[in-house]
Image (tube, rainbow over all chains, first blue to last red; front, side, top):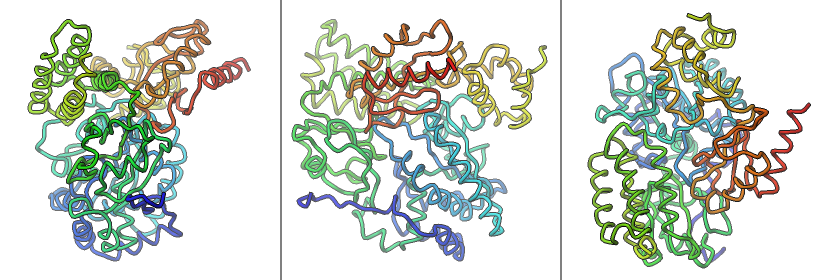
Length: 387
Length: 157
């Protein structure tokens, strides 16, 4: 569509003739130089949380420890997100290079990919490519080895400290923070854990140069981002777009003409109703996302959507902390009771308060983020929830 | 204490006896026989010098580490939002009918277990199901039945 205000970008999936040249070129620089370039680029984590990647590497590098780890978080589990799978399928070498550079920069000898169990079908191919890459590292005299570990069907293991627990052979229950992974991570050693897409951006910033990357996006949201687009759209799929777009522009491109709401950031993200499309930005200055954008048209019941989200979280909560475990069950029971007229409509306000208590008191991001979808759906679609 | 069976012996040999080896060992047992039975858990615990309760506690945290008997082919239909919107219920109904079991059950011949699962990362191509490690997306009730029939044929040969 020529009238589009969206800028489509082709960085992540672009084919590079000899990707190893990117590695060789980067290895001529010192770790500090590479880290400073990444800081300068403004690259923020692409998994959703948006922590500045260069700073993460700098903090891990500055820790005084003989053993450090690099982990590529490929436990892509947020409903509506499926871009990492395609990145792993299409450009694994670019991920490996990003991992090797992370290891080179922070001083790690071991770098792991933690791949969700639902993507086991990718394992065989990934392992054989990884083996080749490890040989390339050996040929270059680098004491860095890549490994692959698998998840076993637990959403919460995408949370970094739960992921460490899982790799350590334990239940995937998040740890208290601080200490942060840059100090105390996998095996209680300093660990830099990055999303798949983030690591590919590191590689591509080395390839294209910092300035080229900075040309895209806004002050708070530099660069582009791979979006996973699904729901009521005629063209679902994976698109790399410049950051900082308005939801209205997004809907013009991807909507089906009848879009009533857009869920940004997956089940744990925010629901934007039509009246706010024009004044909501997708990016770190507005609503950030790990890539998931889901469109709903007027045929959809927002009650059913919220119910589906809560079902998901009730099952995926690790259940170690009470606010999240009990809170989720009560939110679900609560909206069901209102629907059945067993509770008055005003009970919704109690539930909103409960979700805000969960935000304050839950141990990890799962419980803390329930208020995002809950409040944004309930407040904008109150009639659909009650009647 | 029972002697560890050949499978577990080999896996401990392959992955090591550290706690960090626990997940890969359990995952490989499930890959080989679809579920962990109590004696597997006890043997792994013994080999890794852990308590059986600890190993059981770890295993039961993970959806894919089943601790109850499963069929040779484990079908998991995604029930999360996009697959819900694109008609996972019709897929589940069709599979229940063709397999003559309900979700959560295993066929009498132990060939199929039918389960639901949370988001599998194919939201643009729902509804989707996993059969063991293999993905089938953009399903209709007809294609879902056809795929299961192919697995039935395979198991006869």
